[in-house]
Image (cartoon, rainbow, N blue to C red; front, side, top):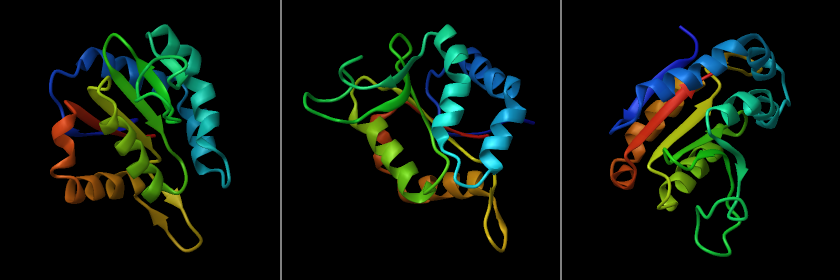
Length: 161
């Protein structure tokens, strides 16, 4: 099944919305996998690829406080996508996953406007000597290291593209 999904926490998250989001990823599967598997490609290319479809679902793209007041005044944080009505934030990551995933989680927890967080990561990552299941690793790292952090968010979902 594409894409892979892990629910780390799910409270009142719309299954229909998740179905629509994963439908967009499935629609662009070939291009997303090409970007995912190409060394030195940036997650921004995946953002641009899904942008129009996500916007049709009501998501704003590249959201800073100038676009929607998610963070305290003066904050320079940005989220890749945000849905103001459903209070869903989406972060798409591709490289430096260990630090980027924690930053994505931190941003989603920092905003009182974000109730549901989605972090999209590659399902697999090719390194010089092996293939890593980065989707599984991301899930395990969050489950094992964020027991108390998740009290401030209703839902957290990891999607492997």
